[in-house]
Image (cartoon, rainbow, N blue to C red; front, side):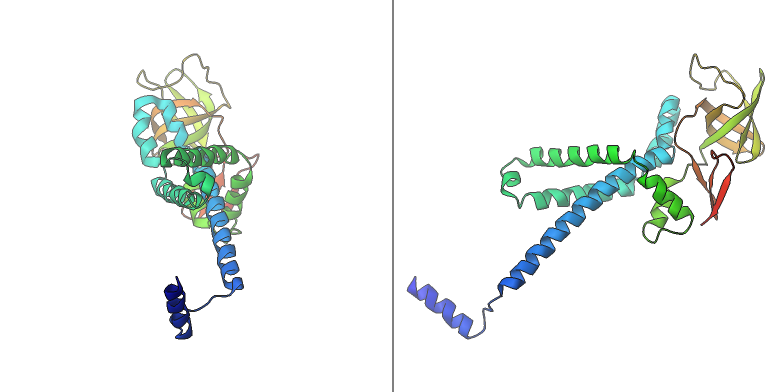
Length: 250
């Protein structure tokens, strides 16, 4: 033991080993703690944003149209954000392993607990007004961070889903209005629509299909009771469900 102490003393004196002050280690501890808190908060925020994006973009609506909606549903999922969330969850798990109580648990159990907490919090927090507020700020150029993310993932998928108001009904087609444009929706036996639901004038519906000039080639229709859709064009985001259509430059 004396030989070991002697060697350590010699290395200190030769400056091969440098002593660090208590303030240095305190600063490292604070930095580590802040990093953990930031990663956890961002993980929870990203999880809630993914739930919000699935709802706000209309991606969840594809599931109402059966097999025909499965492919566009999976194509619309923000996979890049989900990959980022997975990486963050693994980081949280790595930080958690530094805690004795967590490190003693099997990896499967601790990781499952982290996933349940993150997903549960994300689903609940996504229902609060915060993301809608941030989306509005992004539309008004008042969101310094995250503007592009909200514009890309928070706006409604106008290429496949059309939210419109019925203005005329007859046996062969519906006449609908969306974003101040009128379209004809042909009624056919192949058109998928919910049973035991009566369509009526001034009703908001969502149409799964493609716009072709002044008509919509619809694969399915259903009543719409989702969140206010924001349609993003090249230079504008439009909220069509307010009392007066509002156009915000972005």
